[in-house]
Length: 371
Picture: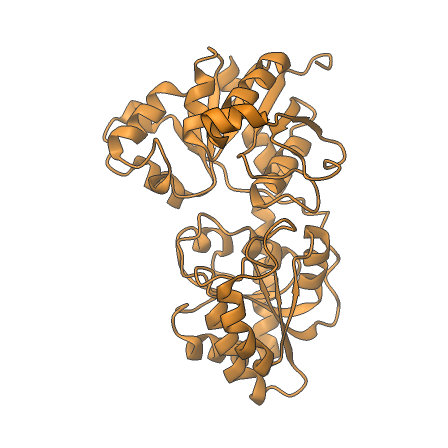
């Protein structure tokens, strides 16, 4: 342990990487919070494998489950056992488990304070699917942190105990406001989709909207960054992607595949418009935050926590109506003053999510629990 700083063990989900080419949204959040709280906490990130050289400035400890343990116990139990060993060695003052309620409950048996961090709807998770299960989770852990009010409401749905409700906290995902590429002074006539190329994310609606909008917008083009997962270890293609690819090609949409976070932010900094037509209930919406930070005008759905991430600085559309998305694209393309006002509003809105603010909230919560 570094002098004066308590140790925090941040535990990743089994499949999450912690390197530029392998980290998903959770890995990026853990990296950002570790850097933002470095003055007060020494963070040890624990995961199955980093998936490449870990993020610089962050300490990573691999906890790979042995082949025999995986065969006898299954991957999740074997990983939990490997993580317990790594946590014992780290001897932290506090443990944060990301998105895995069963793993958080397992680590709580080590008689250490454990925070569970929810990045998704808990009602679809093991050990959190019913009101009784969520109440037990809150009772047995030191606290649960939710990345949006929407996720917190889902956690507390059916729970009447106010003492337990006070253990459910909300800290939104923060952004390094200085890390993004400087927005281009002149935006390219580029319409951008960033995310998993799936029906849940509304990729098919994006393709059909572009097919409707682009013929009326000379000089404009569209691009979709991502694959089945928003990281390098996701499959390059899926039956869904192949089924929609001919439509995308006919519409003139480029599909470069996965790009790491730095290159994705650079693309957003050039794009005039970013479209996020999610059908599923987005827990929060990091892509929306990054688009606003990069200076793009944002079109989004109102699903889940997306309105919390985007605020009033977006044009909202029905993800199941491509013609409505196409109309929003044309509106922004044909009305530069409107697009400029939306970009300006987005840049102001996203400032509230700076890591200086969210990092301070993380440090205050950790200190209160550890005390």
